[in-house]
Length: 172
Image (cartoon, rainbow, N blue to C red; front, side):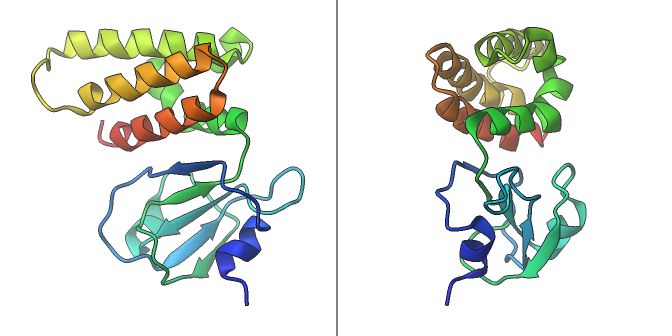
């Protein structure tokens, strides 16, 4: 019998793995994201504890399903294309944090991420947190990687790198 995740995913390959929250509580539900435009299954599936099932900003789902599986709370299996994942990052945190709107760059992700990297570095330098462990400092390397991958045309790896940034951004 297929698991709930296999049913919701339409048995498609995972396009990305995200951890928008770090939580040690046991998973209680699997949140089903909206259906893919192709109708082939959920766009994403999130494993959540009771606390995060109630208040994970920006991740409204279609339905929650009971789950006691092995994934940690906050794990999101993303089945969307790299471009859709990048847009999701922009919608959920990147534009708010950097002020960089992908629409201003006609969706050219190499340019979007280059500018976002510059803004993030400037914010870090202005914060004066050099030498301290800070979410901004922790975001510098994966943001730079996202910028480099996008410049090389590898939007999948750019989206993966932004997934790391997303985890740190929730602490700002």
